[in-house]
Amino acid sequence: MAAKAVKESKTIREVALGFLEEADSWQLLSDQFPSKVGGRPAWLRQVDLPTVSELQCEKCKLPTVFLLQVYAPVTEYDRCFHRTLFVFCCKTPACYTRNDNKCFKVFRCQLPRKNDFYPFDPPDEKPDHAVDEHQVLESGLKLCRLCGCLGQKACSRCHSVTYCSKEHQTIDWKHRHKKECSNEASQTSEELNSFLFPEWELVTEPEKLSATDDEHHEPHSLDQESMVCLNNDLEDSELESMAHHETQDAKVFQKFKKRIANDPQQVLRYCKEGSPLWVSAEHVPRDDEVPECPCGAKRLFEFQIMPQLLNHLKVDRTDASIDWGTVAIYTCADSCDQDTKYSAEFIWKQDFSGDQTV
Image (cartoon, rainbow, N blue to C red; front, side, top):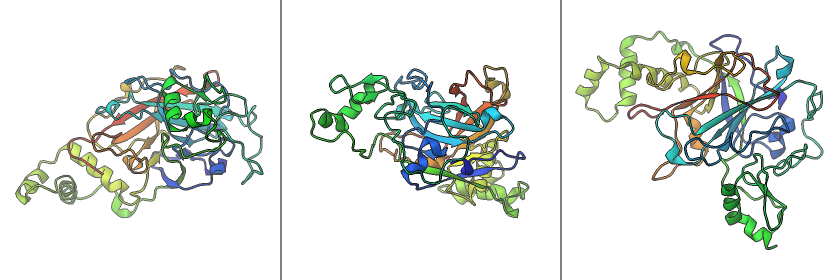
């Protein structure tokens, strides 16, 4: 809800860490302005949702699936009184090639305090009647029964449910709608949707750094610990040799490991206009590799998704699985209004190098 919004960083070093918590379903609905992971999107603007083509994976051309959203208003602009960033990703493991962002999508949506969808004052702690947003928004817009995105394709037999694509209709038909269409099951029951990622509330806390987290460590102790983390299976002689010839990549990875050690359960780091915590010295974007917003303003770093989130998504497979080192989101520095629609922003995906693991 609004009180739990991510606050903008006052300095480049102020970071808000995101953690997962269980929550009642009503707390994750649109009118509570949630930050959350998994389930269906809690759309902010109730019209002009991203289209099916805008949500397609650029590699396999299948619809991406909702991963998370972050409620992050910008207080100095009335147009951003409500502001949420939505991230989607492909569920096809083969699309996750090294350092390739084509399997991700991110959209920014914002509204002034006075708008057509929500009351001027903050929402109740617990509404008397929570609105079911799974298939139809309050605006009347129909959603995909499977993923919760824009759904304009109706079941040709019963016409009671809609889908974003033939692919999602086929999945839902096999899972439960075949029985519903033949009146063997109730269409009003909201069964666990195994296609979606598990749903969690995303809560934030300020990052607290101890004195030992100062960046200026003794080089020797830094090198030794880095080598132990990265090369547990090497002989002592090899460790000693590599410690004296530590690569820049190992230093970056060691900084990453040390920084997250105090809060190993963090799944997100928010630091608007700050800098990402990279997992590798490889594939770090230059300024000219982050495209400008169509309005002409620069895109600046806002938050990053951590690899720890993968542990909660139930995506592990023996052959292949969804994977990343970190995913950095860059947004318009002016948080512009592009016809008040959902505006596409930029994602940079960085993978671990070599045998690095968290």
